[in-house]
Image (cartoon, rainbow, N blue to C red; front, top):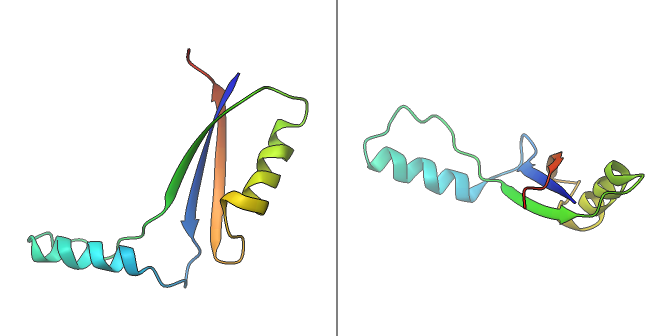
Length: 82
């Protein structure tokens, strides 16, 4: 069994209203050193090991987990801890 961690972020230039709201809130709390905040997603998958695992994960990201038009993604594959 493998653990796959998929990290998804908005591409540069794509508006991030959640990130902007976080930035404004942090400024209101006195953390004015925050120049920008961007919000992303992290998805953890437990998958069976297979011969083309990286290709299969890339397909999952392209077809469902991320929107390749506006999002970038990267993933890591680790041994699952039972």
